[in-house]
Length: 271
Ligand SMILES: NC(=O)c1ccc[n+]([C@@H]2O[C@H](COP(=O)([O-])OP(=O)(O)OC[C@H]3O[C@@H](n4cnc5c(N)ncnc54)[C@H](OP(=O)(O)O)[C@@H]3O)[C@@H](O)[C@H]2O)c1
Image (cartoon, rainbow, N blue to C red; front, side):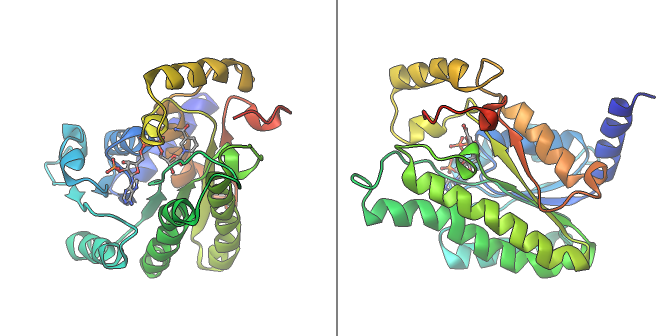
């Protein structure tokens, strides 16, 4: 068996039956991750702000192969009671938590001259504060299962870009959060890692205010800003999240894994 095949087998078999909470699961990277984890046999608890969007997740994400229903835990994670309720519901339903994927997040354009404090709070509240609270409430359960956490950061955590100041700051905080929590939880055998995607084709740019033409121009430009000559796809990030959550990564903690077509290694600081 090739080492790549061994890795895939280990990834799949070790995620089977693992109770996995994924935030921001109805769209983009979160939705792709939910589909992949469902295929790998994980038991899913899926959060998303919009209950109607969450109801549209593919059928494989609402029902396990054995007919067990996955759990939908809709709600805005910037609301403290919602975060508490989310964790309570997961534990009430499954009695355990093995994997937490902190994926929900938003992008906002603007710099120091144009981003007001309302924007700062809006981005920080979901990209950092809610992750802090959710992780804090999940940690006791992850210690019991010797589970793991995968945070979805960004190349913007590792490199500076003008025009997305608050977003860069928020992802940088998540990156450092990953390493600090990894060191704190390592003695308890809980692994904590992050993925740092480059530009990935999702609705995040539209939600941040770009229209269809601007999005097309931005994605076209990504061919130059990524060494591999293209933006990435959701599945490419989902596979890396699954790898870090699986036993194939059993000796990996505190890592921020770039999934960015080589962008982090390039010099230009264009958005
Ligand atoms: N796409 C990229 O190029 C890229 C690159 C690097 C990092 N990332 C990161 O990857 C993650 C996923 O982004 P994406 O590209 O997949 O974007 P997306 O398609 O816009 O998905 C974001 C998800 O987060 C959810 N969300 C936002 N605010 C929330 C809240 N307050 N409470 C609960 N859920 C909330 C959204 O729910 P609703 O649909 O209900 O709003 C949506 O499901 C983000 O953390 C993003 O920063 C993306």
